[in-house]
Amino acid sequence: MKNAEILGYAAALEFLYGLQLFGANFGLENTRKLAALTGNPQEKLRFIHVAGTNGKGSTCAMLESIYRAAGLRVGLFTSPHLVSFRERIQVNRQLIPEADLVRLVAEIQPLLKQFPTDNHLTLFEVVTVIALKFFAEQKCDLVIWETGLGGRLDATNIVTPLASVITNIGFDHTQWLGDTLEKIAGEKAGIIKTGIPVVTATDEPSALAIIEKVAREKSAPLTKVDSGLGIQKWELSLLGEHQKENAALALATVEILQKQNPVTEVQIRQGLATTNWPGRLQLIQKTNGGKILLDGAHNLAGAKMLRATLENNFPGAQLTLVFGALADKNWSDICRLLAPLATKIFTVPVASARTADPHELATAFRSANPAAEIIICSNLSDALIASKDERFVTITGSLYLVGEALEQLGVLPTNSAERGLNEWTAPKTLR
Image (cartoon, rainbow, N blue to C red; front, top):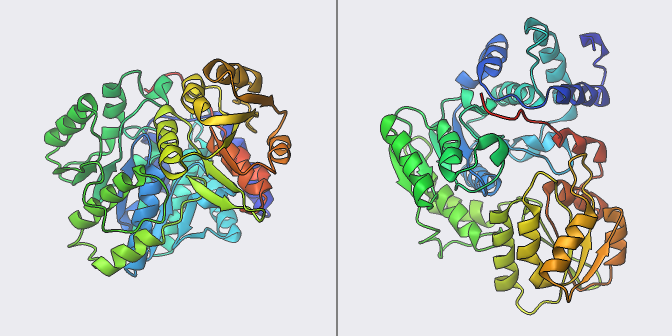
């Protein structure tokens, strides 16, 4: 596609879709080169770099909210998106305007010709540089910068942050990051930079040992946050006990950076009380008095957090579960964990080529809870219609599914064409 053909938002999206053909690329060379071709915008910005298995997005959202309450102009870079691709790049929680995304795609496009035909840039690499350019143009005071996958070789790792944050270490993306917690921790710890403070809530001994080792080697001061202790005095807008740990992590980061970015207790309180992070334990009250809880619990650790929240916050609720997952996730263990909580379970496909088979999901649920009523649906819309009179419905298993639900429930604007931009294929191993 030639530069002149980028005429509007739909065409820009089409170009980005084309980059998905090249999957994911683990390595920093291409991203560094593209950033250099655009004037190295990262050198004009200050970052807090966040990695980890779970809680990255919530921690990023809390940090953004606190610093925005403190009067800073804050960039937020996260992935995946729920509905609109523009969710990935925000300034003061305003999505990047369509016109700016179109313009930046048009500016980046001719630069891609300077890369060999056998070394195509990927969607994530290009979007990372687009985000850097936009944040620099917007003169952001601070950017909350979430890794895409891993850390060490993730495209986001071309920046030198004010602080590196590692939320926790668990089993996810094991086919690319490694099949042990030590290997996964090694990849996440790759965001640690020489002399730059590190904050982590990781408590698994073998994973923490790796983080401590890398921090020592790089003379990076390490702060270990203790499971959300001392957070009781703060009101959190995000649901779930695990958010106390994420909040403690955000608060520790804010404290470490007080000299660079002073924040008052009043501003912290305001930021934590007004944090918004859709699709993660998001509770919707229906007009008929029923409730819908949406949560993108896509790995076992996330499912454990969801189960704990359901048991602690909604004891005795007669739960109806709507579940869909990606085939490359550990869905069988997630099914076993959540099945005992539900009296009725709808299994659905996720709108992705990587979806798990709803029939296989149903088999796993039946095995874990023979007493539950299991209903296999051909799509989410059928499940929503069939469950419309249920008093308490939880929709979970994949952020893709949650994004689709937010559209169909009318909570977020309908833009299903953009959800497909979450699709990607990673190589078999890191290089």
